[in-house]
Length: 236
Image (cartoon, rainbow, N blue to C red; front, side, top):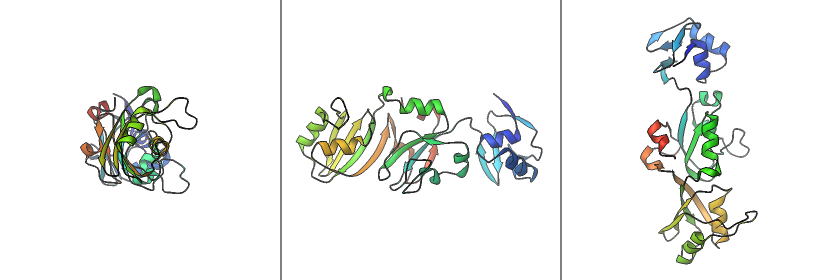
């Protein structure tokens, strides 16, 4: 439990600078646990604290853990160059509180993307030492063959990689569909592995990280949700 002044609470939740947050409070735009407050110096316990700002409720969170169903043609960058950034799909205050993608998906890859403002969490989830399986659905240019599946399971050589990379599992899901499970998380890994196995990836979708599946979250493309502790535990 921590006790903070109301302006600090608003700033920590991403509603703007301290000066702007103080103005919001003094203008009567902020309620705490349904009670209006206009004194920004008033302190509150942050446990189970619910803010109402501009008529919208927000539960206080020391850190946020978010799952986004990333659409195609969005970049996982705070400074995108050719397409909109994934942060444009989230409320503006997440930008203020420095929410960042956990790892990256290519601009044309869809599916589950984790985001957070918790630095140790981002580092831990991005670490190659964790070996967390990630499930991808790949659409191939050439038909899927048993030979292709075997190559991906046995391992293929990629440029600048000291050893062959292989899929943890690889299952044919259709004439041009593969479900590939990886745990390494190398740059463009699925696309490069398919190219090295004499095929080409036309579309790629990440459907799960660890035991947390996108289907279980019920998110349509472009939608996001907070993750609770039980869901975070599935990422291990």
